[in-house]
Structures are given as C-alpha cells and as structure tokens.
Length: 402
Image (cartoon, rainbow, N blue to C red):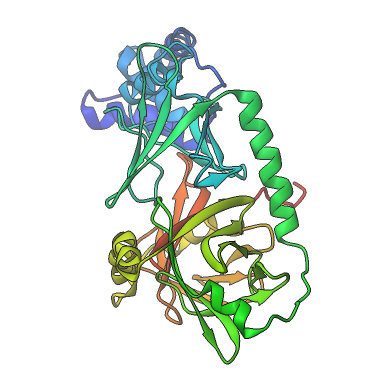
C-alpha cells in the first residue's frame, strides 16, 4: 500500500521515467497531444494506485521528454509552436557583405527544438531562457532578434562583451545559395597548394596591422625574407606565397589575399571555413583597441587550473568525433576513467576535468567544454584557446548498430 507524501509521489513517476530512454518531441509538438498523453498516463498509474493525481502523470510525461517539470515542458512547447513567440526567429541571416561573404547563418526548428546553424552548416542548439534572448552553451554573449511587429525578425544581433554584431535577414533562396558557395569555397581552401617565390620588395607591401569590424585583428611582418602573420592571441606563423597577392598557411586550410593600391596593401581577405572576411589596414593603436575582448579571454584561458574529482562514468557521453574544419577532426576517447583528445595532425593528449563538462590541457593553455542534450549525450563542444571560443559539432556515429 502506498503511504501518502511528497517523497512517495515522486517515486511513482520516477520509477517509470528512469526505466525508459528520453523521447524526442515531434518537429511541431502539440500541447493538446501531450495533455492527452498525460490523461492516458494517469489512467495507467491509477490502475496501480487510485490516489495518483493528474500533476503526477504530467510530471511523468515531462520526464519522458527530458524535462524537469510539466511547466518546463509546456513553456518549451509554447515557444516551439509554429505560431509561438519564437517562430519569428526562424530563417536565414547574413553578415554585412562588405565584411564577410558567403556568411549566412540560420535559425531552424528540429525535433521540437531551436537550433543555430553556422555558415558552413554546423548545428548548435539554442537555449531560450524566456527573456527574449537566445544562448548557445559555451559561447560568449547572447543573441537577440529585432522585429518591426509580429512578423519575422528582420535582424539577428550577437551581443558580446566588447561589441554587437548585426546580421540582416535574407530570403531562403539567397541563404541556401550562400551556404552552397561556402561549402564549395571550404573545399577549395583545403586543397594542396604550391609555393611561388616572391622578392622582398613585394612582401614589404603587406607589412602592417589589419582589423575587421567584428573584432579580428592581425599583424604582418618579415623575418628572414619570409612573410609572417600573427593573429591576435595566437603565435606567429609563416605564410607561403602562391601568387603575388595570395598566401597560404602550411598548417591550416586558410589563405590570405591582399588588396593593393599604389604599391601598398590597403586590406586583406582571410579565406577560412568557406567564408571570406575583410580586414582593413589600421594603425597599431586601432588594432590594439579592436582586440581588447580577445586579450581578456586569453588571460582567463591562461590562468592556472586544478583538476577536480568527477564521476568517471560520465566520460562516455563525450566520446566521439567532432568536426573542427574541412581538414581536421577532434577525436575524444575514454580509457580507464581518463579522457583523451587527438586533433588531426597533432599528438594525442589527456585532458583533465575542471568540472563535469569542462576539461583542460596541461601542454597548452586551452580548454574544451562539452554541451549535452536532455539525455546527457554531447551534441557539440566548444574549444577555448587563443582568446577565442570555437564551437565544433559532434559527427554522427559511424558504427553500425548491432
């Protein structure tokens, strides 16, 4: 016989929910359908215990879908509704083409949840705290959406500590065409390249400081007759000429091309991840101002860290392969209660926990955060290094189910 009391009431719903895997909501979840499920669950539970209340059946349904309460499930469904307040967010948005080309992002709905798709198609779940903002776990700042009325938002704004970046809405055909162009450019950026020697007087055109309106800055110089580049927060690297105005990195699928007027570079274009980003020539002082936020994040990433004890059973949630860019992946493995990471072209290193979801390297000032779904499995990760936060998507498991 069941003894009345809150503890026993919770046990009625938790015993069923714990036994089943978390279910996914449909693309367009219906609150009426969920209410019907709750009433049907109530009948099932009352067959075992006549005193079970509707709120307990609702909680049981909520937990089936990975929510802590019926109220949280209802709020999520209200926001995910095609006619709900977040429907206006859905669609494509583009960067200012004077700053970035091929850079179309999107907000989409999938399995009843909202997702942010990067310019190259990686999908990251958006969290909606219910205050008009949208968040991506592990990334700095937040998104808001600008609208004239109840219709679709006309702009997406990414608010960071040091600046706000505005992206204008574009139509689906344009957004998809930009995505296709980005994928084609990314494939081209990853191809092998051949050096074309250049005289010193040509290289001297390019020496200076460059910065963009979105907070990217770099410095170029000459060392031993070679052009070197230092992106703010990163080490110096040599770039190799493939033409008089275009250079490539040996270590990365990234190229730089310079725009020249009157025998002097006025700007450069960074070709990376299928996107072309313009940086204009600036003074050293202007470059310093543009990267204040990067320096602050770099200082935080470089501080000493101490490993903490965690439940090693959770490490399996993070195991898998993650896409860094067109040429590199990040492989996460777990052995004997320890987590290891290997990035394409680099040795395999252990990473140490500073929390259940955030780990750090001891060989380099870098960290990685894992972002999990309601079932606890990682959907993506964020690399924290060189003053930047880089989201990387978990790739589908290639193993064939038994």
